[in-house]
Length: 301
Ligand SMILES: [Cu+2]
Image (cartoon, rainbow, N blue to C red; front, side, top):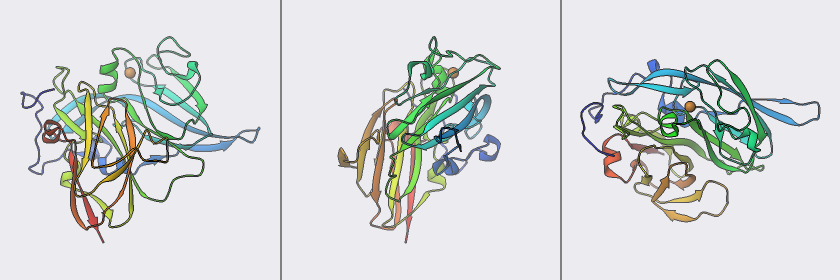
């Protein structure tokens, strides 16, 4: 954890940005891109929801001019936001097109053999190999998935993670929903991050704010996957939000403007903007803020 070292120190508030098209994903699209996969009905009458995730080695521009040799699921960081309903049968085909062994480890309730760790079930999936993870979507809440091959910090920090949302059987109240996966990048291999962000690209939501409507319910699915720093946080300006840790309950734990998350922790935030205008959000560690993890909501009538 440091700031201002040579190589990859990326304060680009002067308006420069990365080439989202060349990266193949745009943090503004990642916000509201929920991947429901495909469904089909089994002979038993049960619905199975399916996805294919492919591990791909890919160079990503994580800050203007700063290229990072990433490992990705489906060519993007974070990987697809997988979304389903509580109780559905899920089937995730994992294809390893990377040059390194990987897995997908899901958070949630599932059999040991489906846990996506070395030595259990299919274990490490070698380059060119594939496997199928199959389990029931339990419990409702906000979870995550990530590679679980050693060295673990490297396999995660290289980009192999994503959000995993299990909706309650009855759904949630209508809202403008966005996903923010808080992450960072160690661009000079010193086991400290030079770039911090929500959804990979620092300052992306400063340069182009997230548009929200006044009085409409906003719901943020917030996941922390940051490596090399113990704690991350989310702070909202001009408002307070209800916080639902892990999204597993219906009673908020807190009405606040700042939450702190350890690695792997996640939660759902809900609020309504009462005033039009621009409101910042950012990590409340100023160091992270200055290295990219900040943005604006632009609230319109
Ligand atoms: Cu891996």
